[in-house]
Length: 338
Image (tube, rainbow, N blue to C red; front, side, top):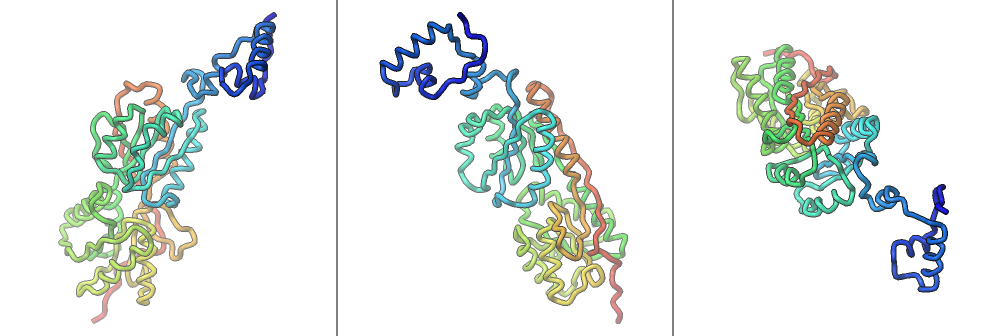
């Protein structure tokens, strides 16, 4: 007689049915006798599910967010993580997260790790060079990149419109009467920061104004990174009346440094930034150009899921515009009395 209802097996029974050697011959024989008597047949789908090899039609898709950064708990990643998790679950996908410290060799273990996690596809962002992009492309797993990178036609990419965001922020400062605007940027070796510099120079070119090299200062990556370049700018003979800063954290350090010199930000000197994430407790609230991460996250997950469903689909290159958010750190150029 064939048993119709599901059978829940204890570990010793599973050991016998999976032919493991840890069971005595006497126990093994009793189990096999009972199996024949009951007509027990294992459920192939359940067994494959347990092994993680169930067919794609029968299981929830696993999609990952892989972030290559030097700081694993960097708050700049929080908005993308939140919307990725939400949108993945809306599409009945299981979201998974993986951080790879930048500049390490941990990516060598990625092929095995991704197979163990049974990823159907992933989003990739962070600090990426050409070698990194080529490596991920060799894994034969559908993926989409978010960020300002130069990639081949076979890769889907969603990127912020960095150049136009910078130009728009610069035009806001120009409209307030500022003509001498400094740039404080992280190291200019990466595509993202090169685009910021391109936008900064283009804004000056369109305005028909000349800029000075000494107005461009490089910084560190975190809030403390804003201290040194701000001090350097304040020591210049021709001090800018406004500063464009490439990151919200660095901008906080810039504002703190100015305040130590009794400079009133927004009145004596203006500051605007490209935002990664806003520190809501930081005062004054910094004027910023920012990405709509809710819209970006939805778009990324949509493209990834479509790529998983149809790996042969054409790759997409989409540029998303930024948003301007007025804060308390920009004001009219202060007139200097003779």
